[in-house]
Length: 446
Image (cartoon, rainbow, N blue to C red; front, top):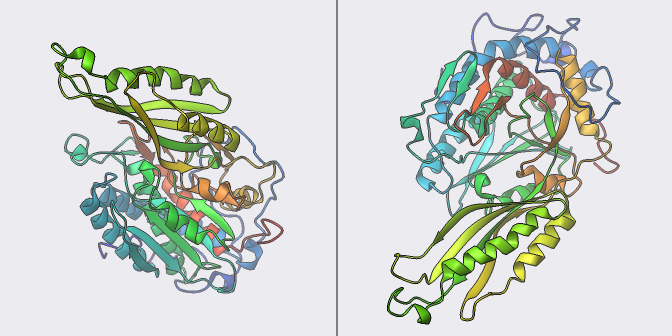
């Protein structure tokens, strides 16, 4: 198998009722699909009016059986691909490592029929990929992902990628090396069945998502106009549910300038930037008590020595918002901070920002995905999520959007981060169905 190819052309593994390379539309229906390892049962129903079968499946007889059978065969190769991607450490801001991974991803997706190009970024290259569809005149389907992680280089030395008791653990496996491997496997699965996506599919993989996509945002937004729907490869909820809404998020740098002086001989001549910053943080802590707003002080630096009045100090604030109004209100408060000490200066700078993506009372895209999952023998649902991601950019605009189509697992950004290996096959089959089956009408103008 090529090092860049997830799905090998293995003799003797063609799906039941299907000849390799034969279009699914030309095959007779195989009856009820095989029941794969199902995702955990949902605990919340976002849209109860779900049809029993996907509208597009009658046009592709035999496809559910072919997808589930082949996805089970593929799961091991996708697991190995995830392990290989996780072995290429890619912390945010480390351009050489991110670029090496971008090249590996580009080669892997090209092997499934994609056209790929690298887009230069200040902290590492982004990727934009495109697969031609059977119906080129239709609006494109946009998929968004990222290849940066929160884990610093060297983490693998004491936390290698390992599988135990059906869990594959390691830095970045869940968020989101597995999601990228799963999508690669879904495209390879379709190619192996002689299928192409129903419509053009575009994938944007940014290198700075974990720090708010300050540069990658422009690439995602460039692909939004005309998109029929937007799908995110972030991990699902721990119980397997998809993500139907996300809070907004903003990173703010709070900087204070004081005046240095000797802390013993000339303390009265100095203005402590550290003291000013501490008092400012106490004051802004109240933002976290405002409706729809959460505040986390994630990083603090300042001063030089214990015998020097600090001349500079800063803190990085992470804010999350349930609504656009809460976001506007909090940022307005931060932009009008004034110094509490004569001689001190306070400045705030927005480092990155994503708008709130509110939940919709009716969600035709979720209904469509649920019906596809049912046809594949799976149970699936959706619920809002607390974290933010690049799908916020689409959901906030009212575009049909779903996230959480990556791996199922637990512990993103934590030392117990892992993915459930037995959920690889169901997710590969679901992604492949989403690519191959025509979308229903998702809005009045699609």
